Amino acid sequence: MPGSDAISAAHKSVTYADAGVDISSGDRTKERIKFLAKRTFNRNVLGGIGGFGALFQLDLKKWTEPILVSSADGVGTKLKLAFELGIHNTVGADLVNHCVNDIAVQGAAPLFFLDYLATGRLDASITEQVVEGLADACKANGCALIGGETAQMPGFYGDGEYDLAGFIVGAVEKSKLITGATIVPGDILIGLPSTGLHTNGYSLARKLFFEVAKYKPTQYIGAIGDKAGNALMKVHRSYLAIVQKLVNAGLVAGMAHITGGGITENLPRVLPKGTAAHVELGSWPVLPIFEHLRELGQVPQDEMMRTFNMGVGMIVVVPADKFSKAKALLNRAEEKFHVIGRIIKADKNDKDSRRVLYS
Image (cartoon, rainbow, N blue to C red; front, side, top):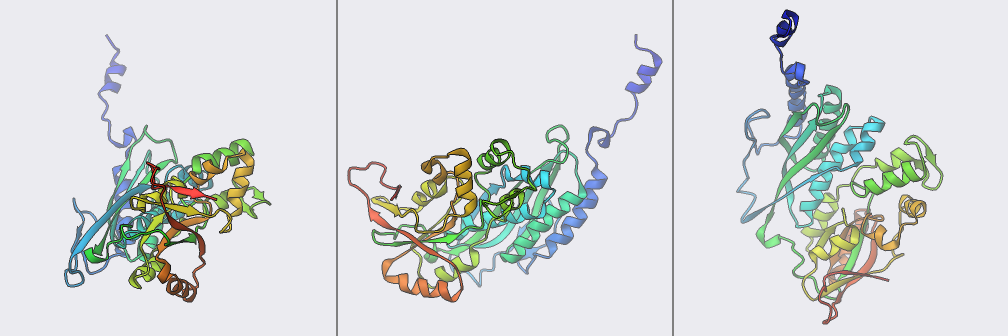
């Protein structure tokens, strides 16, 4: 028989906080989240943060035949670097901008966004930084942050670690939906510059920087002209503003957001059957960080092209007869761009016609 002390200990009241979940702390954090989220609200948002479901009323006066476009994504192992550097506000912007770009390529304007933040033990300061980044990016993209979930999961995540994912909904007029179906041989490929790795290829990049080269995150690297951590943490860019200008001017046949899989796997997603893409290597300036990563690991060219964006974060397919107008629009907007190739007719004997050919 266990002793009386053991019995007493066994019958001691145990709370959720004893198991690692501090509900009171979570409630206080949620109040701060509500404040940050409300900065992104517009007249279409009904109610506030805290209901079982978030409410958004589509303005039917603005839309004739709206198509809803949605996407979900995460930040990936870029978060590992955020933990080490203690930089948490930029990953929120990474997530929102990534999701915005994913629906913008189909011509959609973002309506609302929801996030999922899961951690071991809730750190109010870190959570606020993450949500502040989400809110700022939503505001910048004209998107309402109308809800989400903050989960405390002790034992599942290590101390100071969290995961972050998001879900976006946008809308586009059915008549203006961009699918790539009108792409034909001769169309021109315009590449819009990236700011860096964006949110892809971090498992390989971290291995090369921190295991192979043994860099410290705060170490300055002459080859890239920046500190290792700062270069890797550059925010995933939103292309929404310039893309909308091109779309509204009727200059776009298709678009590809260059994320995981690089140009090699993302551009074919918008190509119609019977076409392929000819991309000219050297037609755009590859960012120094990619060149340095390649040198560190002696990474083959094809592996680089299907792992990283290589300095091109968005590809816009423009009909040849509209290229002059597109060029003028981009110049007026002071948007840097590079003509990186053309659409070609696929070889009739090529069973996998929708692919990228490099030269």
